[in-house]
Image (cartoon, rainbow, N blue to C red; front, side, top):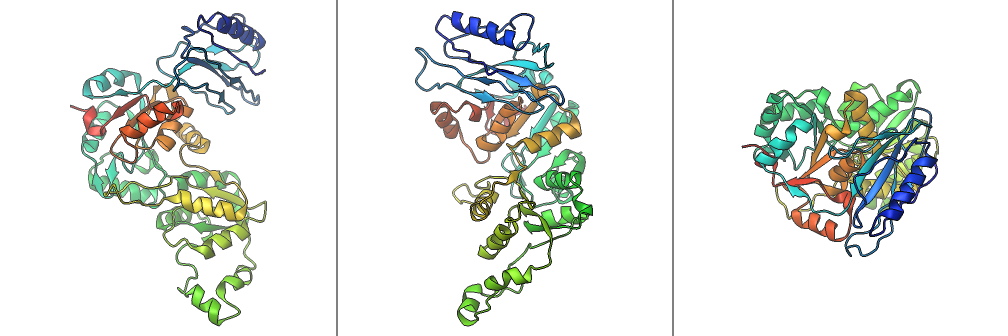
Length: 421
């Protein structure tokens, strides 16, 4: 598909003419009908390719007399799913490539606050709820106020509930046990997703278990349990050196110090993948090992997520997450990882393959604008930011002033408890 520029002027006439011409190039019998072209709004066309047919539309906008904090937007969509909003007009079908073209207004409007009344009005239009975990359902080992009641409310309404976390410190089995202990009834491993599950499916689809190769893992106990269950061989987790040797002291006393023996110690290990997750024992040795394994271009480089910090019970305490660890390995190795957690495509494809969700009838609820909200917006879901975790209303206001529309949720709420009476 040819790239289409839609330029909106104050009257919208030029935009309508360009839109009609663009639809003609796509092979549409007649121009698709947008509700309107307003000077402070952008109609983003997104092209969904038929199987085996990759298409791309790039839509840009110039502004006249627009608000200073609203900026031109460019959208490029290149995979098998298309964003859709519940409030949008019906999609148009391309007669050439059978693509679905969705019309979506994107502009920096401040999100609406949800309460129990407005949420009840919205509920019939939503079939599936996807939750982040930490900062949304609980903090540490304590449920956030109202989250248990909200879960029970959705179960009574027969809504599909999925927990999608970027945290792989616990296996899914351990996570479900934790949820049951806290009182989240009806949760099973089937509707809980962590990055380990996505990575294991990715490795399995490539025949990793039968390849004779092993994984170098920078990760915690939960990830090890998932790999054990999938019968994927791994090494590297835990303290490094394993015997707790003081590397700096050994370097001073021994010309054959551990850090210089690394290449010899790892000889004979056919490493097919380096996986980087959260690891409290991360150090220079682990970074060095990972970087050297990744010099083999056939070695997969997989990361769980790029979260900078993790929410905790003490708001003023900074808790580093996987993002800084992954960034260090990436810098040392000189390679880009495949990241599977939110907001990346692998997480969305995994959800769709398991549940076949309709994005426009799905609500993503999270506490981080740069993972949960951008994930939901990128893949056409309704988005709600709860203020019980990482990001605050001040962060939302700052994103609005900066014109960062993809970081703005459709709705916000103090916590899940405010959505039920």
